[in-house]
Image (cartoon, rainbow, N blue to C red; front, side, top):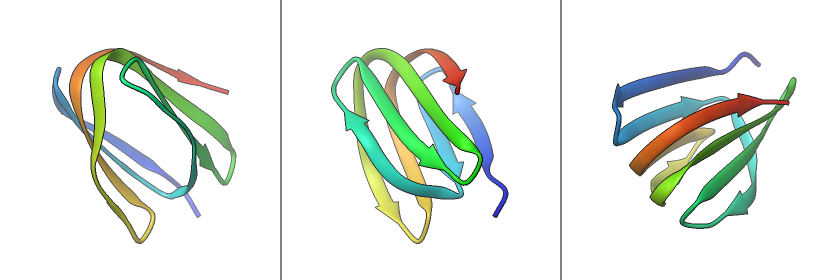
Length: 67
């Protein structure tokens, strides 16, 4: 299953294709994907909505790192 990451602004993002949440804090969110993981770093991060492999995030997004 492929994934998509969509930046709606510097403070809003959606990710599709998420298998599970590995880490959730105000400074870092990490998600497992089929082909590795993705980490979102920033300030005041929060998962607003999650379900069906889709995640909606808001907060001050500082960076995205794939592993």
